[in-house]
Image 1 (cartoon, helix red, strand yellow):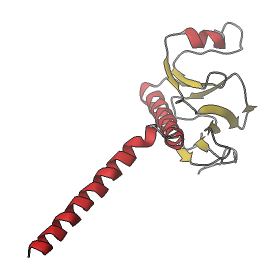
Image 2 (cartoon, helix red, strand yellow; image 1 turned 90 degrees about the vertical axis):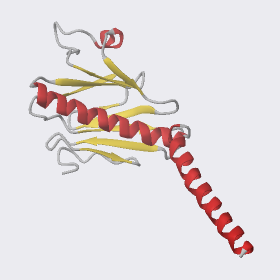
Image 3 (cartoon, rainbow, N blue to C red; image 1 turned 180 degrees about the vertical axis):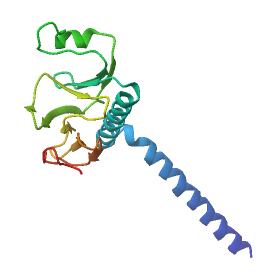
Length: 176
C-alpha cells in the first residue's frame, strides 16, 4: 500500500506541474516574438471593433490613422489630411490622441484597400456613424521572414478578422 501511495502522490505532483507549466506558457505570449506578433494583431482588431462600435453609438465618425513610419495607430474624432484647411498628418503625431504602438519587433508593414496600397506615411480610414468603413487589410510584420499577421476589415459588414499569415487583399467583398 505504501508503494501505491507513493505512485499516486507522484502522479498528482506531475499533473500539477503540467497544469502550472501550461499557465506559464500562456503568460509568455508577450515575451516571444511570435507571441508579440499574435497579440499585436488581436489588440489591433479589438481597437478597430471598438472604433466601429463607438462611431455607431456616438453617431459621429471615428478616424483610424495608421502611421507606417512610426508603426503606430491612432483612433480619434479629429480629421487630419491633405485637404485645404485640414490639419496636417505630422500634427497628428504631436496631438493628444489615443495612440497605440506596436510591440518591440512588430511593425505595420503595409496597408491595402480598394483605394490604395501604402507602404509609407499615414493612411486614414473612417468608421461612419452607420459603422461603414473602406475595406482594408493591415499587415503586421514580425522579425522572421514568414512572420505575418493580417488584420482584415470588411467595410460592408464591419467584421474584423485576424489571420496568422499574409492574406492577400480580396477587395470589398473580402470576409463576407
